[in-house]
Image (cartoon, rainbow, N blue to C red; front, side):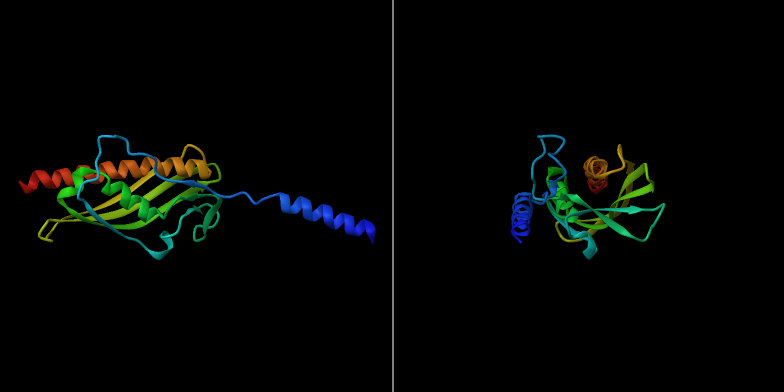
Length: 180
């Protein structure tokens, strides 16, 4: 009995001293240029309910294409719609418009165990100061990840989100040219 009690004490003291590893939190990084300013941009995002959590999602297309999985030790600091909204609003080029973004896809997809890509699909509606719709554009972007894992997904999404920001602002600049 005495050895059993000592065994339990050792087990609990070891078990209590080992803490569960906390997930690492990630964001999209700093803007590519420090010349960017937060203008008077009005950006709002709509997304399906499943995209409003901070888990990094992936899908094994080669094995179980209908099953969504999540990385356990890596998460976004906020939901992808919140981070994407902040990234798009953090640029003076959007200040002439009210933007409504509809985010449809934001996940890593594995075509094979050693080959993955990140996918981002969204649409943008631009409205003038008088609330008149002046344009709508669909965007579908994908990019292969450098590594088929969470680190590859994070790096791929950071790069893809910044490229999406550039494409949206290029599209808005085109609207400005037609507006004048």
